[in-house]
Length: 157
View 1 (tube, rainbow, N blue to C red):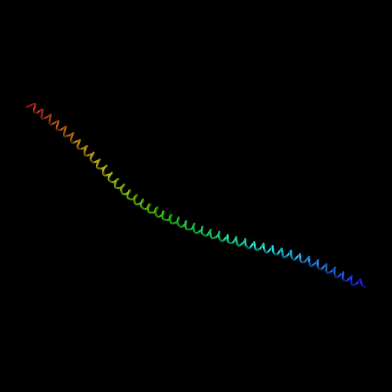
View 2 (cartoon, rainbow, N blue to C red):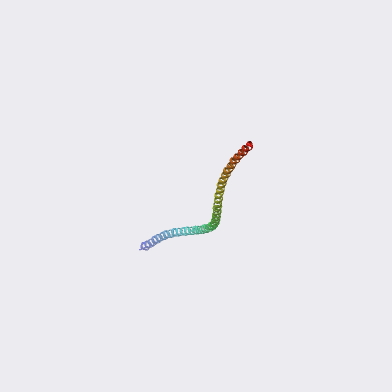
């Protein structure tokens, strides 16, 4: 009968030791789980920081690109204004060229008319010169004939 309580005590001690071992195992498992959770929290914190940095970097990039776009837009507007101004100058120059061409055409028409009148006057002058030459030759012939006649009469007298 003495052994039964000892056996019960031993059984209780074994159970207690088994429970302690189980509790220790559970405690270590919980520690591992807590450590894993803590690492996961650290990883998530690091990931959150990285995402914030990326977001800030994206905002900075976006801001930079906005400024770049604004600058390029201003450059394009300036180029468009320059192009519009140059185009207007070209139109003005073209209008002036057309006016000059019209004046040149009018001057050419006047020159052609003057040239035609000059050619007509030269032709008339040549005709008159030819007629005057013919009359002069006729007068010379008549004068020579009269001179001979006069000499002949003077020789007979």
